[in-house]
Image (cartoon, rainbow, N blue to C red):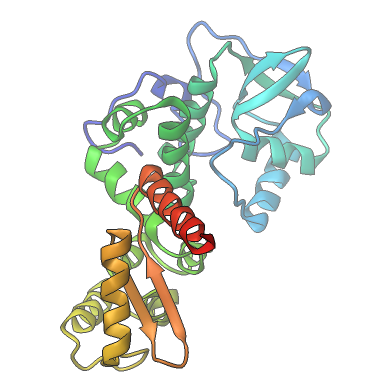
Length: 293
């Protein structure tokens, strides 16, 4: 369901909240199309489909057919799915030869928007897939967060908070995709700057072993450096390493962190956009050149 107050120009296309419920779309006629002429959309924001749920839906489709048409666009005699991939997959599993479709002429941006809208309004997407879909809209079509919020019928804070999840390590976003870690748990971890400890806390919290509030307490303890029960602790750096980090901060003019000791560890050099990365790269190239002289 869209958030209260949400409004978008495509909402009339998806008045159903079940995948196999017939709806009437005024002035639009569905046609039956050979299922072999229909292609799945590689840019579909939803990447994961529950196999047990698909099998159940396939059984229903085998008995009653596809009651709600797929939304597609046509090109050179083939049809690209814009909305209804789950129905398509169930029909394919059921062995249907044809499925009903509604054909629309749409731009690439409209295709992305509608695919994202349909899944968000059905709540089919996990939070990471939703964030990735929003980011693609912004990157591919130059949209702001405000514009994305307007197009998908969500609030600006919803878009901002969802996009923030993409800052998390892959090990954590995978847990969200698998349904083992809730978006609320994941958001509580975003501020942690130690990747190893962040992943450790995520694994402790997954499968609802910790409530969001309990996890937030652990995050506060991490930042206060008090009573952290498990995970790597900060230790005082040797004077030589502190001096090295200080020199690197001055040379690269950015944040530099070190994790480890004088025998083994990692050094992190932050950059905040492509221009910043290019600046650091140019600086290293100049240092290499000076070394050769």
